[in-house]
Length: 216
Image (cartoon, rainbow, N blue to C red; front, side, top):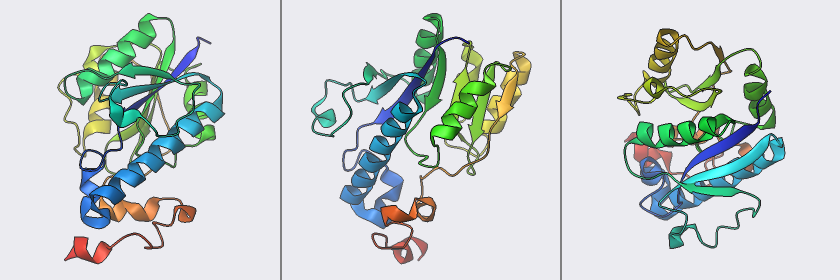
């Protein structure tokens, strides 16, 4: 089995920049605070999996002051997402990692339901498949594991639509890429998604949410 690198595509948790679709429910500051919580949770889960190097692929660049004072673990690697749409930024990370002889687990920070077991399952699948994919209920995906890079998986993709996962699977068939589908989970993108957060975080109980304002 080739070595594995978990690459977390992350946006700095800055008010008005991160999780903007949650602002109607949480306000700009509250949405940024949740973004920080999900970022820290994702990094700690990735490290706990002990699968290999954990890398934050960041926007803005890691040298930006927005990344300071976040209490992130020190045993992580940093890189810059760079310019372009999400597909271009993900493609650069995937190409660089696989070119270096590592398999890549590409994840974001929007799916707290991804746990250590899920990361191990995605990695084990690479023993028998070229890729593994974890779809989300909104039609996208929260994890893409790859042993080899192909730009067709990222080019001209209808990001942020309900067809992303299906289109990705269709393209995998076209390039003869065997894929293992994992359990569908929830992303946290819209106010109604907050009910899917861990109960102990306090959001699902409505302690920090004004859902009535989002449904009017």
